[in-house]
Image 1 (tube, rainbow, N blue to C red):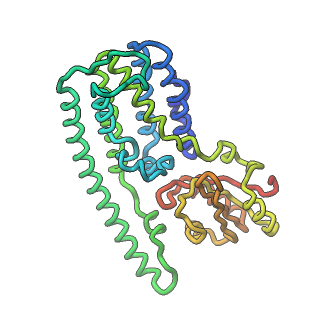
Image 2: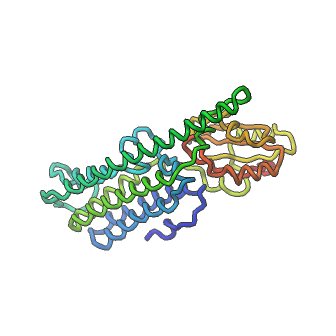
Image 3: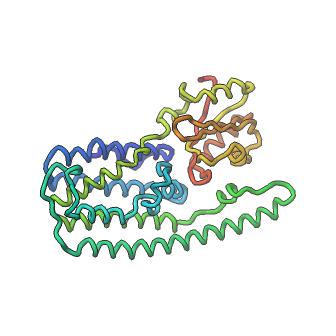
Length: 343
């Protein structure tokens, strides 16, 4: 049903596009299945398989280099949503709360489904699932704390070493020190176990429900996941082409017009809103031929883009190869060449 949505060969810088396609798939393919026909095992199975495939796909792309991207995905930018998130995605308790709300006989479910008379039996299966989730969440939170403590210790050790070695010559930034700490597989394992917990919770609820109840629950899950409306607001695909798009922001076009001939430029996308020009310059300090660094606020999209100019073209190419996907604060940079002659 999902075509190539769950393919495993996406370049890292196109993973934001996966979240966008997933949201569109829920809205255009999954939800209409429940609206256009009565509940059936076939429909339930197809949607359930897509939900499982979604978590399997992000598990596939999670590794030591990408884990911060998945733990702090760029589409979770609304602070009001943080209370319903757990280790990079929706909290498994949300699935349980959804089924509890649907079981409430005083609620009208007609807005979620076109059929009437769905009465959930009074039994203990939701409580049993909830107890299992509580145990797993507590264990994972404890493991996250231990992993974070190890990361913080590594950060502290590196900062002290750098501080003494650079003292009197250069300042040491928090961002640069954080980037030097090697992330272990522990974060990746915890993230995947959290996804397994989400999958198990969905499976247990569907498995212990009758056909009608499962349909109502799955429709509610799809409606909720598609409710992250800002998932659809991402950098357009044409910005990741080898050559710069003619639709670059005016500020960048003006900057390029002021650049002396002979400079070689890159564009940096997916920049955290807290990143400043000085922070971006510090990130590329290892390349001696850097001449100019700019930050552009994309009006109306609540996003930032950066541009770095090099005097040495070989250093520019090396920066693209080495820095694409590197973490800047909590987001991986998406870097491509920007030829201002094309603007």
